[in-house]
Length: 166
Image 1 (tube, rainbow, N blue to C red):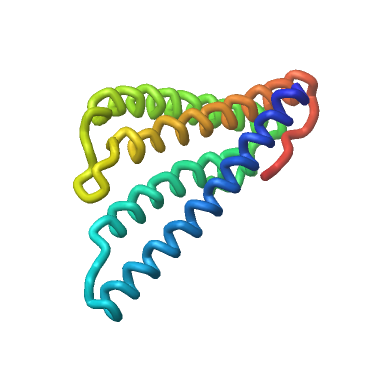
Image 2 (cartoon, rainbow, N blue to C red):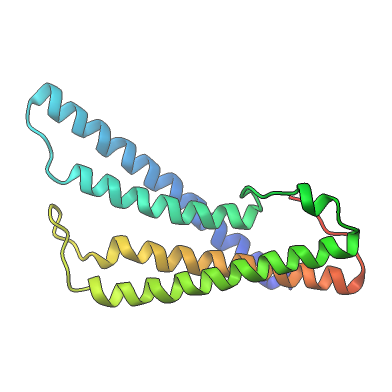
């Protein structure tokens, strides 16, 4: 288990660095667009498109980071009223349902990649598979993190240990 945890920690660290780098790219591109548009009076035709695609990647990678850190919002009012054993199994059920959703997300993300792989973006003329692959990559990372957390919860539930809160 610790090998997988260390591997997922490394993957998550890589995703965090990627999000930071992409955010820096987006800030620079938008800043340059403002400079070009209002000072030089000539806009960059590719800046809006690049910043949009970078934002898509930031969202999906950021969502996977949130899954790993257990920092997504959740309603705990009902769960807090349950006894400990029910809490454990409720957490497992929630993770299982999330995993099912992420499987659909990965599946349809892969299907859409087949459709858009031959299309080019209007301004930058790059393959549309690049921005759309964020759905596939982000969904895969979210599934892996969520599945690993579900397995940890099952081990805790079967061994009788308390569920760790986020």
